[in-house]
Length: 175
Image (tube, rainbow, N blue to C red; front, side, top):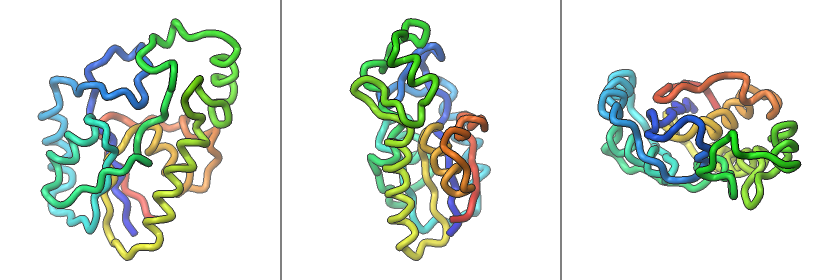
């Protein structure tokens, strides 16, 4: 099965803000970025399209695909809990320090750890393995795509953020 992992386009929020599952707006450059992605996908046929239900992914998936889109909560970005929409510079304390030291296993207050995100993304991958799709598009977030990649490439979760995933980037891999 060919997976096309597509990260949403740029968002209209200060990069100093933690926004995980908060539903933030897309940047004014959305149409320009979406057209570039559409050209890169030109001629490719997809048996199934999955998307995070958050508006930054939903808007892109609806722009790119006229076929049925399956919105799946398992593709939502990491839930930063109490840290959502707070400035990164204002986060402190032992829980924040523990999370910075071990984001894989440490949960954000009233939120998730990276292993929590990875487990729900893995659940989706297991569902996909049991289906006979040839080409699948997944429109998601940086954290979700990193989780998918470490699973597919058989890497350790702690190494998930060693690779940058750019806004609007398309990654093609085989499951």
